[in-house]
Length: 420
Image 1 (cartoon, rainbow, N blue to C red):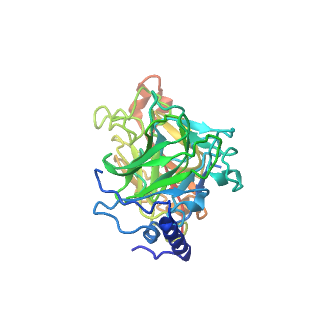
Image 2: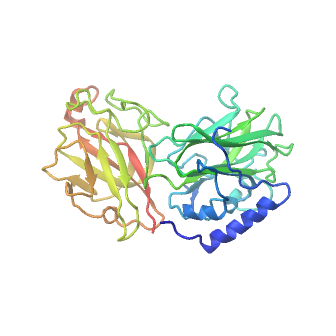
């Protein structure tokens, strides 16, 4: 059951509709298929987006833009309440948000040519030169397409970005496209004329493009007709299809390789390092952490973590939480760990009778069988914590360069935002 739009959402809807009717601007575009941490976390309901979007076509994708954009509140997603919604501003000098991988590019620091979103330097002054943006860096082999992929099993249902500038030439045409979980196009906006003829950080040209699709969004991209030298900012996404956003997939998105010559099988960004067996022979390919339920910071919490695809026998699993995300990871037995500043005491371990390839936390197989919010030291509303599990993996100790001292393995990790 969805909640009604808030007053803020309704005010945003009215402002959006006035904007859509203003000469020279574009309303919501409905696509037909086939045609510091340096981010802001904003509390929203995905259902309240209905207040700013008219009805969609049969496939259910609603596109937004191009919309003038000077600050975060100009986003049509700003008045939603999905607790996992983030706006990556790049103001830390890095892409810090979890769960997204760019096709190419890098953060552009403040320069006389940088075109960050206007308010990122703290002042609305029609200039973006004192902020940060994401720069195409002339693309890969001159590519005119910049793509942001959501690589985990849980994907967002809203996503967008702000196009801010292009060079050589300083005017061009841009097309925004989004893709579902099978990488099938959900539709396009454009080509749209963009650029003001200048590359000196002016922000009047900045335009938001976005999409909402309840089936899940695998990727969004912006492509230019001519230029491979352009900028975007305020990459934003949220309302994920699962309460846990998985990350820390070895050999993927900059994460270090598995330490015992045991890459995940398949190595497709869905699991931890392979675990050798004996059952099944050669291993399961790697253990997987997922979750279900509602991550509520209080007694209403129903979040349950699921650890699957461990080899058998497996007589011990220990579950951890922490508050720091390690982007490249460190060795953890025969696996890779991407979480530090761990919660103490450890959250859970399996009971002595456990000897299976899968287990839930909490459950009758875990000690203690206690609420996950309580065991996370009762994190505050809006806080983000990171979770993973380690498990006994005896055969790992006989695979060089690992030793008997490293005869355990590690799942992928996952981020959870605790909300009301």
